[in-house]
Amino acid sequence: MSMVTICIRFRSGEEHVIEVQVGSNLLLEAVQRSIPIPFRCTRGNCGKCLVRITEGLEQTSGITTAEVQKMDPGQIEQGYRLACQTDVFGNVKVDIESS
Ligand code: FES
Image 1: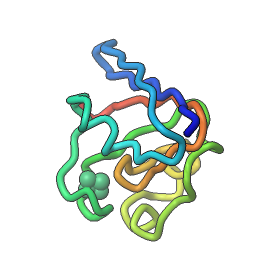
Image 2 (image 1 turned 180 degrees about the vertical axis):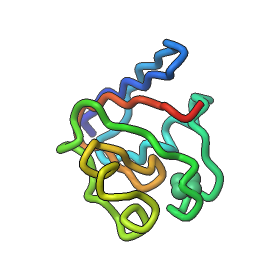
Image 3 (image 1 turned 90 degrees about the horizontal axis):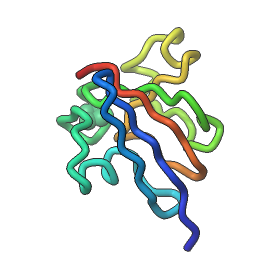
Image 4 (image 1 turned 30 degrees about the horizontal axis):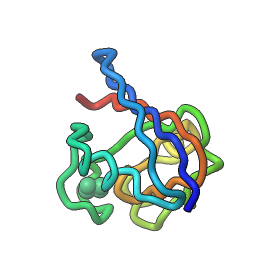
């Protein structure tokens, strides 16, 4: 199984670089490594896990119906995703702006 790199940056400057299997879920992988992305439902309902993909958005799974309901079109255009609804298929960079 090939691996991809996820770089997760917090507003504080804290940064985590992790290697995951292709197709892994962004929120799940972060939580398993105790990286504190805020979350609650894990199902696209609460909107808590909002993140911004700053590089590699095209290497992520498509926007889900839940995301369309939780985000406005402007956010979607700017690369925001719900981490629990996002699987990664290539290297990505992620900003956490909510904490
Ligand atoms: S954890 Fe609730 S929307 Fe992702």
